[in-house]
Length: 263
Ligand code: SAM
Image (tube, rainbow, N blue to C red; front, side, top):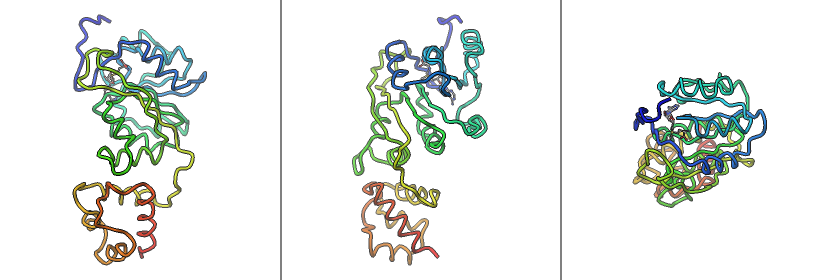
């Protein structure tokens, strides 16, 4: 591949790592065992792919930029399974076939949130996630209840995973340089994840509570619950608070209260 001719596509978040030490640090955190199933999202020119192949992983690599395919095929051949598809459009159920995987990636930043929400919905198939994302998003994922960064992304990722902020990465370690700092985070499925009968309802309540951040919880809940029900809930919860001040355990209490009141 003629590197000089390659045009980096901003729309695909193509900020390629140029520092091997960062790549090695990422792979070390991933602690890959021989023949372990690993997914890499967005191979780019393959700097991280190479290290993952060297770690003896059973590697599935997603890439959407077709101009990179010939280079990746030539460089890695059958050492990787190249999925030439948008990772968000791929059929994860089918590709996983019930297997457990590790996810290791320098993520294209424009897909970070939808990608992580997808990861959360497949948490039972995941043993570890090590991803580079924008530092600001890493801080949001790690945020504590009530802080300015706290939101549904924090709540959801911390519900399914133990999140660790690993290290910050400066823009000059990429080409082309991004405008903002990046960070590597790792996420391990949480061992003491709360057991909930109806997770769909739980997340519906949470999403509703966060829908309009400035509104009191009472007003947000009005969109999914009857006034009668809200008045009953208000007997044991202060619904004048905003949803963003509710911790996970308070949301769990709220969920259980709602379930107990539903016909
Ligand atoms: N892993 C390489 C590195 O560290 O240098 C490249 C990382 S670059 C930040 C993100 C890569 O993801 C790009 O190669 C881009 O083409 C690819 N990409 C962008 N959107 C994607 C998507 N929806 N599915 C799969 N790959 C995608």
